[in-house]
Each structure stands twice: as C-alpha cells, then as structure tokens.
Length: 357
Image (tube, rainbow, N blue to C red; front, side, top):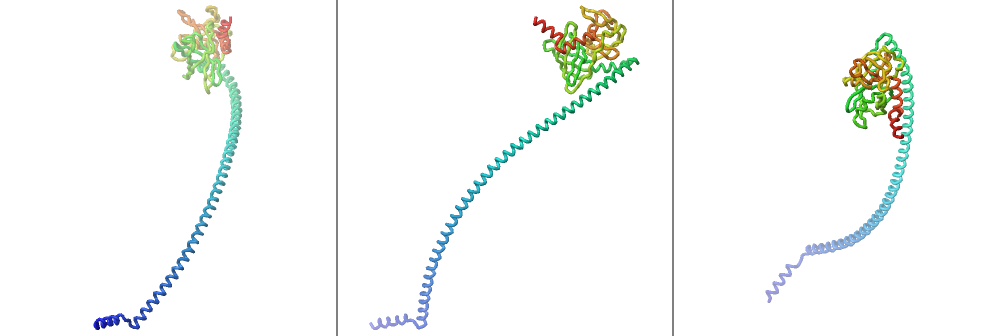
C-alpha cells in the first residue's frame, strides 16, 4: 500500500511543469486564441467580400445583358437602314441604267441616221463624178475609135468589144452572147433563142462566162423564137460589166467591113473578119444580113460589129453546104426585140395574149 502511494506521487512529479514551461504553454494557448480570433475575423471579412463581389458580379451581368440588348437593337436598326439604302441604290441603278441605255440607243440611232445620210451624200457625189467622167471617157473612146478607123487599126476596137462578149453554157451545149445593158450589180445579155432552148427543162439553167473567165448564173428574161433572140440577166455584185451599143444596120452597105465575135466550138472567144455580102436576105420571112465572116457552131448569139465597134447584127445561121454564107439578125430588129423582152413584152407577151384568147 505504501509502495503504491509512493509510485503515484512520483508520477505526479513527473507531470508537474516548471515555470518556464508553464509560460510557454500559456503563450501557446494565447497565440492559439489570437489566431483563432484572427481567423474568425478574416473568415467574416471573406464572407463579406464574397457577398460584395457577388453583388458586383450580378450588377455587371445585369449591365452586360442591358448593353447586349441595346447593341442588338442598334444592330437591327443599322441592318434595316442598310437594307433600305440598298433597295434605294438598286432602284437608282436600274433607273440610271435605263436612262443610259435609252440615251445610248437614241445616240446610236442618231449617229446611224447621220452616217446613212453622209453615205447617201457621198454615193450621190460618186455617181455624179462617175457619170461626168463616164461621159468624158465615152467621148474620148469615140474619138479614139474614129482615129483607129481612119488608120485601119481595129485591134483596140475589137479588144474593147471582146470585154462585152460572153460564153453561154447550158446543160446540153454552148453558145455566145454579149452584154447589151449594164449597171452596178446587174447586166442584161443578149443571145440566140436556140442557145437558151438547149437547156433541158423549164428551169432553164444558164451559166454566163465572161472573157475574163468570171462565171455568173443567169435568169431568163424573155425569149423570141420567131427572130431567134433571147435575153438573160445576171447579178454582178460590186461590178459593172462593159456593154456594147447598137449601130444602125440599115446604114450597112455591101462591102462594108465587119467582125464576127463568138465562142466557136467552146474553145474560147475569137474574132473573124469579113464583109457584108448582102443586106436583104430572107429565110422563112425573117430578114438577115449576109456576111462572109466565119460563123461556126458555138458562135451563135455573138455580135457582128462594124468598124466603130457597134453591134449591127447577131450571128445566127450558117448555111450548110455553102462556104462563106453566114446570116446575122439585123441590129435594128434585135434592139427592138431586146427592149420588148426587157419590158416583159415580146415572147412572153405573145404567150399571155394567146392564153387570154
């Protein structure tokens, strides 16, 4: 019992603190109290700050929402204004484009009219100059022909006449012809009726080839089978062919020099010289000039010209079995028939009259 009490007392001594230790413990305790108070204060302060910050964040969010709404409204308003301006601009562009097109069209129409008027004036001036010069050239050519006749030099006259002589091609044969009337873009060609009749059908497909080897498709104007004369027309775009003029066959005398121009045998245009053998030859009641100028197959329809280069007959017949006996339709008769055919009389008029009877 005594030993147990001594043991307890010894133990209590062990647990008894010195004064220094007590002070340390007290300091620690006070420090803990202070820290606890400080921590509590800071905790309260943090809670207050959190509340303050939360309120500020809510306020900022509210302002952001309001600003977003204001910006959205402003943006919508700007978009509507832009759309309105865009529509107004498109309308203005369409109106300006329309006015521009109308103005340009009107200006172009005016310029075209002015251009046509100017071209018309220039064309008239050129035609006037051409006519004036043509008359002067004709006079000079006539004087030159007279000089050539006096000097017995017929080459220039014949060469000029050959420019008016053509070859007539049908599907069944060939013949000759010559330009009797010409203007810019068109020419009338006289030939023999039996040459055109070689065309195998009613379409009368006829080709005309000039001495310069230019080819044209011809349309039949008229045909006179009684006097064996036909007239065709060709289109000559941009060209005016040389034409032969008619002389007076009634003034021809036996012994006068003549030249037969044509395309014998299809070998090309050629010339034969001769004289008037007789002035009054009739075959089946039709009058002819007789000449010893050679007329062969293919020469039919070609011109018989005098020393002045004028047509005084159309080569028509060669009397078989008689050498040097060739016949030509007199120019006075040919000129009238050509005029009648050109004016839709002659052969076609006769046919119309027959149908009307």
